[in-house]
Image 1 (tube, helix red, strand yellow):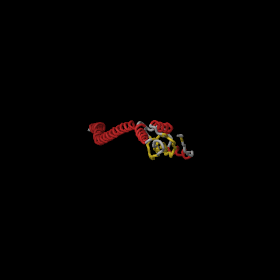
Image 2 (cartoon, one colour):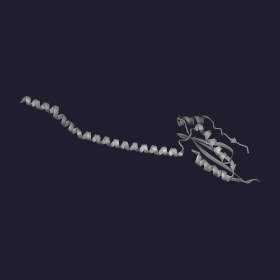
Image 3 (cartoon, helix red, strand yellow):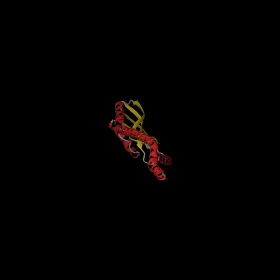
Image 4 (cartoon, one colour):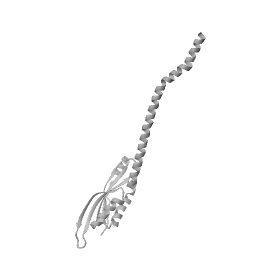
Amino acid sequence: MAGGLVAGALIYGILIHPSFHLTSQYDQALEAKNEAQEELSRLHSEYQKLQQDIQTNKKQLGELGGSPPPTSQKDAQVARVTNLASHCELKIDQYSPVDTWDKVDHQELYLRFAGRGNFQAIQKFLQHLEAEIDFVDVTHFSISLVVLDGPSVCMFNWACRFNGMTNAEPAKTNKAKANAAPKTPKVVSSES
């Protein structure tokens, strides 16, 4: 009888008790599994949304013509604007920098232009500037008519904002460099 009790206790301890213990943990494991599946579904939904946002942003960036050119190419941007003005039969008398703003990820350069030409040339220039040159915006303009002995000429003053991507240096370093170096305005004139 003592041997039967010992054998029964061993069977209970080795086979039955662990089964009861595992059965009691089944509810906890099922709850943990359900939580993990919900978390996985939430993360999958977030991933899908991020992928959609990336595609939307890529499409928008493509429509804008890509990212702004680097700030090192601002002279090329200015040359494109002046060449476009010449192509539209506007005479640029001068241009000069107004201000430079360093943002977190890009730089804004403001330039003031002065030129002359007929009204149709000015209108054509503004239409082409808007349609053909990305990341350059006209911020201010004024037109005045000058009547001379010959055909009437419009004097045209406008300011543009040129956007350019800054390099990988932190904005604080760029500001420190900008504050250290004095800004001297550059004036370019062309004679009539």
